Length: 216
Image (cartoon, rainbow, N blue to C red; front, side, top):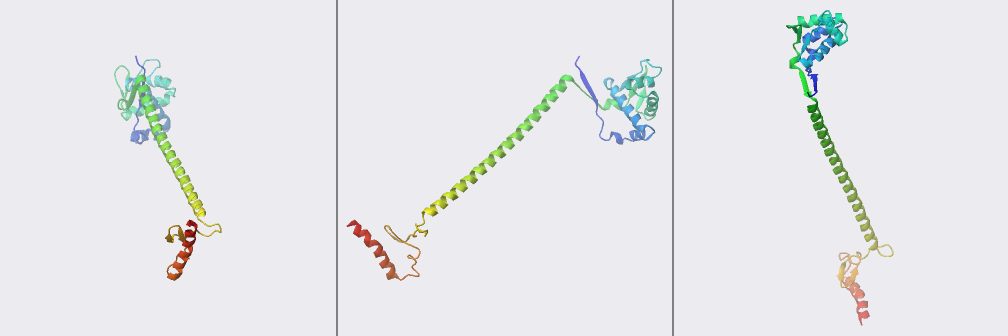
């Protein structure tokens, strides 16, 4: 026969039940409440039933022996439970805890193993998704770092090109004002607004003449 586990499915407001609150309010109420809970646990396998087997002189003493509780406290607890309809005495020395049948939870050992296996798989899947998210985030951070390095390299290249474009004396290379074949004028030389036209013409011819002399 497969091994089966049992548990109590107490409601979240179980201690707010007026009968339980009254039980706790009497002298030694917390002890009586513990005895009641232990009786319910003891009755789980039989769906809330407890039996008097005649080991002791009376049912209260026998339950006290089973629960390792004081017999007088068990007797007071039983009286309270019977008065408030939480326990009923049946035939053949049978005692029924009326709440228990509706709050029993149980499953076989194999079912428990299957459930725990599914929970582990679910947990591993969740951890795997979290790992993927962390890996993706790390990849994005690495990409950002690479892009940042590339931008820095590009800026360095631009600076080097600007330096190469300067003359030996540190002055900027002539801009392409008035370009004629291989002749370039500087910004100052190519300023049409501030330079007379005849001066510009003479300047261009003075640059061109040496070129023709070299070719001859």
